[in-house]
Length: 523
Image (tube, rainbow, N blue to C red; front, side):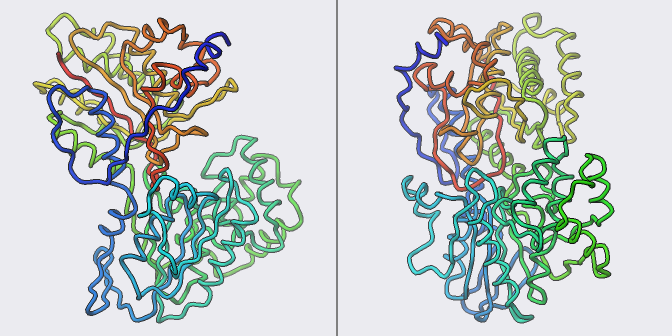
């Protein structure tokens, strides 16, 4: 508590850094600080997956003929284009889509988080806002990322638009992370409250995200392919910004344009597993019984084209290109970093130690034992796409600075009542790990940031650290272990060096999970 009280005067907000809008990073002067390079690289990574650039990469329109091209498919526009969308990044996606499609767009309805328009306007991000007299109707809801009555009204408006389409129409569906909470439409007689209660009970008893999604889809009018079914016989093009490891289209926003592969028996099996079948409300039993007798389930979605237009993989590829332009040997480790943040931090700490040893003279670096420990921790994390061997080989062959890149979403087990997010907690834990060993003649920096610009309930996207963090913090009277025990990473970084290590960029209007950047630069 003393440490917290001591740092209160230094909690003034540090200056905001402007978000880059994409494009190549210019080569920075040789004297530029490593931290400046790291933050520039993170910002350009986010810039690569902003709604505008992504939409323009996915869509092309011939103004003369009205021919819309989506990847290798073409669609003839003649006052027959409609738009719906739901998710945290959909406001900017819709603005870019309407600008591109112009008068071809007849009508649209989108469901976005409460307060997002005001936040974007306050941040001066006019490109994320719809123009005056837009043909797209905006609903705001799902406060605190929870389904609510406002989101339900939006979902019903989206369903109404979809059901009114004909075989001559084309429906453009914009989907991003957070879309599930913004598209709640329980099948009557199930109420929103009953569906939420059941979902919370399942989560409290340990159901995983796949099991929760199976139940959500079975009780929803629009999830699990329900939106695509409502729009039939219109053609449907779904443009998806992925915030899920592996980019499974059936999981993102609970797959409203992807036919569910699950049936009622799968639902009953899940409910039995968690001891909830006997306690089901009568309305839920009615819906499940009705679905079981429906000979047309599962519905197909042959009239749908689902396209991933932005993902963590794409963001990391851009980060790799930008790092190489700055003179780094850059390698993407994984776009599927998952697991407990403590284990992930241990992995990055050992990786920095082992990789740094390969950049120093023989005899000054990591031992064979440390390399074996790194392999053990990596195996425990069970990352399906980890390129650890390739990364270490690249480091061995490097004759200069190295940048190792990764992305995903680690998890934090809450033990205290502090304030923070997974990126700031990961950075702080990695900083503690880096301080356990002498780095030798190598500068090391680790950065972790959320591409949506908001890490947990804070105004920061994440933070960056170096091996000196723990000792420098101690000199300021800050005990790293104490802050970590309370999950109070944000308070720590607000205090430490007056917040200079925080990444502050405001809401970005996009979301492709997190980016982790590890820099090693021989002195």
